[in-house]
Length: 380
Image (cartoon, rainbow, N blue to C red; front, side, top):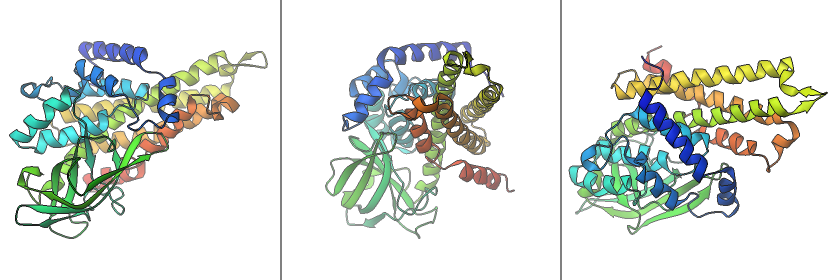
């Protein structure tokens, strides 16, 4: 498996890095946080990203996409992670968009994906519940049959970028017990449907999340994604792809944290010499570098497996998530430690990285969960 970028991907990476450097900064992130921005990102910047074609990279050309590979999207996600960009690539494209692209009818795809790709429609994916933790198949929300379809009732938590979304993909149980992988149905809902309410939450990294409440929401067969009662497989497929994408973002974030820390070690003088000349700090910096490069190999391997439709893609995705969860937390912690007192202040940018690391290490399952999943997939 080739674990290096192609020439075209390097060019895409350079373009993305230049765009993000010009249009975003930690000052912008502070303003979004301190002003308690309702959606937590910029709609105008999101549309600029759409004009560059980023939102359509993995979607087919006939629907306005580019028809490219997951590895191409990986390059963009890494750069977004490097800048800690809050724009909803993960939620709108890799969660909601993937669910529609892989499970939607022709009519649903035509109605949703072109608008998503143009930046005019926001999608969110509501699947987590109070007792689901890392098991997406633990679904207690119910879809009760009616004469015209179903009524949805229940509550979804930690819905990424759920506040301000135009449409939501929601999991509900049409049959079976709470933890049964069968009997789950995915529904594509308009956010304005009666009985559907969305409460804005702020996570510790200041990102947009929401509680979605379903109180007798009326739906018809036209709202169903894939097949009634068989949405569990699609749910797993979507989350795996989003997990790989999140790992690419984490790789970018830890790379930026490492670079900022190395720059500080080279310029901060103590006892008349740069602190980077101290042997103990050299060893710790070397450890940060090694963990970053190991994570890079795992992230590329996971995306290459998705592109080649390898049966190892789920396992390699778990390898990447376990690696990235541990590595990002380590590097963010070391960033604060090596910056000393200034690293503990809100005025320094290190705080953005350590908070983001704490959130994403748990998103889609932490390192322990994915090590166990890897073992189960290989029947250890």
